[in-house]
Image (cartoon, rainbow over all chains, first blue to last red; front, top):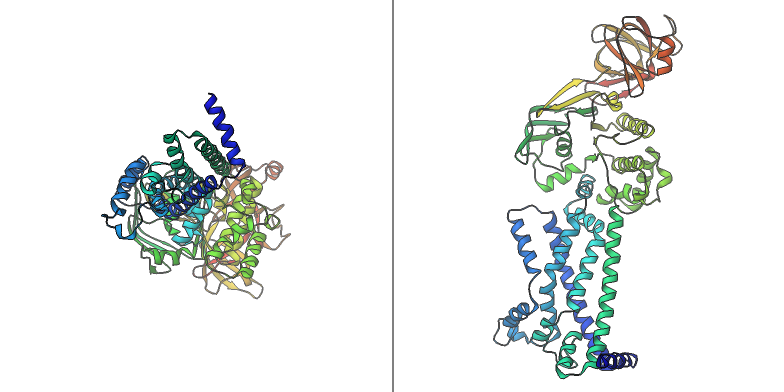
Length: 234
Length: 348
């Protein structure tokens, strides 16, 4: 108990001092997670809009596969991406292994299914009459999709916020594809794992405090947008 | 011809909703569409609005066969607009909503604003232009949805139960708007409704969808008319080859044969035989039926033609009409509408 108390006090002191190493780790985490979330949003939102509205044979199968991908363990993603970007892999010549780009690729694979599924959920619960109204008023497919996006925007933003929360807290991909290189690919979660292994709790606890603060902020945002969606529906 | 439906079939969830062998709908007219619940009225309207596709069959729109491919449908959809029974307004202000269809058509902003304001004025909602759409009441939402459709100036307006869930004051407003746009803008209107509704009085023709089949019959108080004498100021017309009435010459179409509709709520009982307080025609007939309808008293009069009229409960009580009694009624000029067999409706 004493260890935890001392660690928390030391961690707060570290945060107050704005330790450069700590700040860099936080910056890498936010940058990598932010970019992967943006890329996943760019892929997952249009995919979700299309899948929610399109009618085609095998749609149920596609949705089942998508839901299965939600449960994909980060270490499996790490392994698969590693197989492609390691020196002997198909994309080995790009030299991506143990770079921030490698982490971003892995994280995109992790959260694209999440963004897509939550977008489908947000669009599916939207009243079909929005699409009908847009179409009868002369909207083409693209314009109708924009109307759907606008009406479901709070649910879609909540999907993106949830995806950011998922990647900023993951450790497997960061460790396997980033390599936890100090001053380069070290993220908050990989640094915490390392500090724990070394028995150095102070930095780990400081990072934990920051991570929890970010997670809290993200959840606040998530509930804010979910709340807006519910108010809209009323 | 506005629509021609040939072998039109719709199957939903394995159930055949309708199977229309051959049917034509003329332009410039107001059609009501009745039928029991689940008969497929809304589905038919959606197909006519080109937002749903038939399972089989052909639709011709202004004699041109409709190919059920997206590019063609978009072009057609921009000539027809459907107003839902419970319309949804998009997030934003009332004016944003009314401008929506114009924005889709890439109309310049200034023109868009002008037409949106005009449409809002038509439905009496111009004061609400900056109001957030979700703050409106049900009746107001329906009027704004109608304005949103009118701003586009469609050739065809399809309304699914336009006065459902609307109070009587708003019902009257909506019906007046529909009548006005048909008269002024020559917009063809098809609306679904239930039997003996207020809007039935608006229709020139009634469509009935039941057991998957569509049929048409002349609406109440709509008659085949023949011009028998064209005067300088007033002309004489024979209705249903039986009754002669006098109509202002300016309202008579060019051709001698046409249809003529008489608004049943504007016909009034003559005080005494020979009453000519306002310009119009005097018709005598026998009271065949009296019943309570929509808060008024509906009277069916056999006067050579079957004439339906609606009286207020006060007038009915004052005159104490009886079935079988011979009464005289005045058909004022403003109650008479000439419907050419081709072309547009001409108001008196």
